[in-house]
Length: 633
Image (cartoon, rainbow, N blue to C red; front, side):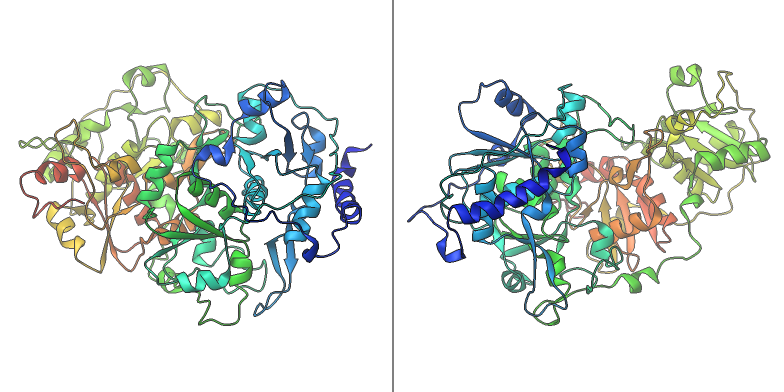
């Protein structure tokens, strides 16, 4: 049998089984009397490892298992895990006419009859363990099928963490091309009841503005902002008022083994650890004392988030129609949409650009060729890495060398004007020079150095992608040690106002026209136990957590970390609540990571951006003795 016929066969089997088992209408569906499906309370209730799949293949799992591949027919035919049945997306979602919607709604859950027909065709019985996989990032199609099974009370339904990429690329396990055909049931499946993990739009409508509920938007920032997918369907664009934005892919991380996809575009992704997940959701303001309703575009990505949250012990439901339903509703009072993107967009400086503060490798190469004498390159990597090879003309300086320590023990502060002039002169930098700072990759340290020059009114940029991108593009390097020739002609005529002091942060806490961005890791933001460095734990009251590294993505050609495009970055800040109608203060541990975020915000045209260089080294220190002026939560 030809492999491309598999999805067609599954569809035919569904029709055939509906005739064989006599399920002509939903009233014929059998449901076990007084059955209560077991609760989903741990991640292992929703996700299995590739090792479990391997154990199934080896016959060491003493249970009936049906393995399902939800990728396209072409991907399945090219290679799949042995024993996997190919099930297409259309087999477990439906398009229907929905009251109040301007057009048919896609991605809805199958009804009871359709569900029974599907599982019968696949040979799934109530005691079957169902394991579903897809690619490592697949918009949640495998979790959506597992969630559907869970909703209809199936005892054991799982997604495979890491998907087929982990199986093949990390584990080194083989794929096959021979298709596996299902063995249909001869006795109809009996539904054991329904779990309360599906939300209707009416439930979601009642949750808007209700503090007992959290509305979770699991789309991407552009969708939340109402500018992405604008032509997909007849939508009202924007987001549900009060919804907390969660980028669904943020629950994934790079694999610990450092294995990349075959095309070298990025590392294989796996689910974050339970601790990492709890910290992530807590830092986003998603707490376990509320009922959560998750949605996305069509209930696919949000089904993944729902499975994760269920596994963490949260009370959560997935809205299957999601924006494909809500966005089409004509009753804007019952189903409201908020979209202030255009208003906020108008507040940005239209002349600002990423290239104002971040240089691309091509821009640097062009600058070096055209103006080598006035292009001053600072390599902040270790001396050993510099000696092994660097960008032609670069001098080697530690990022910390361009900071000062205060007598009270607060370290890595911005030098005074006189101190900075002396440092710049020692590096041979004069007025009119263009300073480019780079690290091994895109780094907060390079951005912090560039920010220091920018603050004092000098033309400086961090190299996007760093040395990794430069060498990945086979651009020229050298091993010559370049020694700067000191000058005495560097001058400062003022500053750009992008430095915040502790008093500015304190004032911003109660200022509705200001917003504070904590750019640290979630663990630092949430930390409640005493720190070993003598600083009190926690974060500035009201600070919004958006980690600086979340502003980066992978360059597909070189594997270097680079900035996302300007639109994506703006929508990401907007979705987090960091908007250009407010004065933004960034902070971290010592003003490095926050310096990076501050430069990004400036490059996006935010009118008022300040980096608190004292950051937690100062705030956490003085909270111990002066909690009034340095409050912590």
